[in-house]
Image 1 (tube, rainbow, N blue to C red):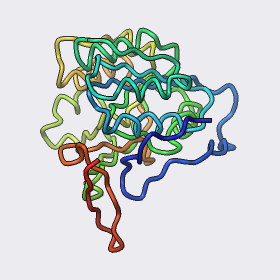
Image 2 (image 1 turned 60 degrees about the vertical axis):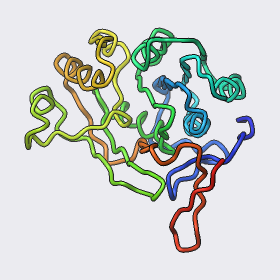
Image 3 (image 1 turned 120 degrees about the vertical axis):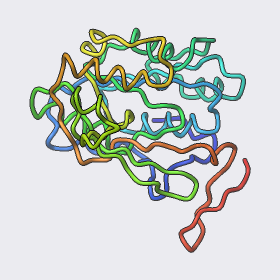
Image 4 (image 1 turned 90 degrees about the horizontal axis):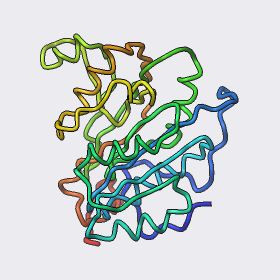
Length: 254
């Protein structure tokens, strides 16, 4: 059982987290692949609990989940401590930024597959079971699904992963057909370690990593399932979304 929520969650419109563990799909067999999720975070107390609960409410038993906080000065540490018993591990200490935090999680990870979910994004309900089924359907190096984007007004469209290969990524600003968004891309942990992450690239390291990874491990399975929700957080900070009778959203300050 998860601890009680500390405050109302900031979820995308139309999305709710299950109150109890979802039933296991009949299509997923034993042994389950061990999935590792890492959440890097810094001063994201407004959203962090929503992210944590979106992962822990999946009802997927072969999960390890690490929260790596960069020594936040807000309420992040108290939120993490509230959920500590349900986490595989956590730290709250000064670090070198997002890449450093992800590497800390990767060093602790033992899962077969790996992803990081930032502390203002949401793992889609049922995503881990969907990923497990895709892993079991045949040999694959990358799983790419759908990322839905949202802000305080509701949906802002989606990104469906397609045409993930080195050439298309390099030419992605041209009409190469390449489409991708990191929150819906899963990689094999050992292959990710073998590929390496450029610690000097703080803003496009995921792009560089994906090129490096696909060069060595090119087998991609594309899904039409929503695996994550990406928050445009500019207008969300310190606000609580309240749905109105007409379907619109109003914000009240927390």
